[in-house]
Structure formats: structure tokens, C-alpha cells
Image (cartoon, rainbow, N blue to C red; front, side, top):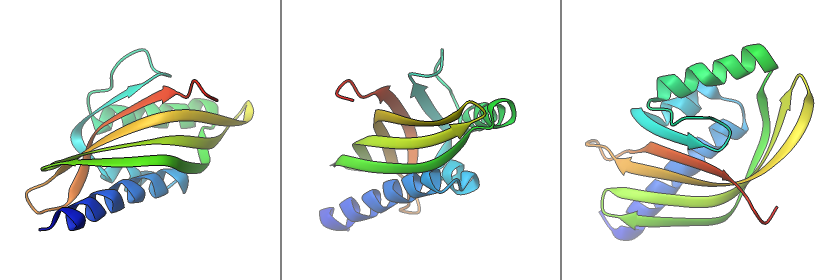
Length: 134
């Protein structure tokens, strides 16, 4: 496969993950991650060590706080292709709703993708931090 093809397919996988998140398609969102993916969020007190652990936390947010994603915009995007690994970084503006009302979050995110044996790209790590310029 060509470098351009790999770049395009890795970027398409990142875009599909972001779109599923933005549109509230949680099954598609979590399916974009490897089962043993890790997650580091500035909003949690620990690293999450699996997609299932993150999904359980998401469900808790939903059940206890009425959490839902209303929209998510991606900007300042960069994808670095490193063989079978791709590192996607971007700035995200996410509009969420909870029982407390709506809120706009401005954050930076890194998504690490890995090419699986069948050639698909799957997210293996996500890191989210506040955007100091916001």
C-alpha cells in the first residue's frame, strides 16, 4: 500500500471515530477502539485501561448526570504516519448537555491508531487535555 493510501485510510478512521462521538452513536464510537485501548482524560482521576472501562464510565455519566454529546468540531488537525501506527492530533470544540445544562468544552486530543492484521485502523489510545489557548 502507498503512504498516501495509508494516510488517507488512517485519517478516515479518525474521522469516523470523531463523527460517531459527535453524533452520539456510542456503539460505533466504542467499536472504533481496541478492547485494550487506554484513555487519559483531564476530567478523570485515573487512566482507563480498556474500552469497556471507559464505556462503563460513560454510562455512569449518562445515568447520573444525563450526559450526552450535542456536537464536536475538529480543527488544527495533523496525522503522523509511523508504519502501522498513526498519531492524530487536533483541537476539539465539544458541546455537551447534562442535567446542569449545556456546556462548550475546548480541548486538545491525541488519538493513536494501529493497523490491524486485516488492514483496518483501530484506536488504541486517546488522550484529552484542556486547551490553554481557549
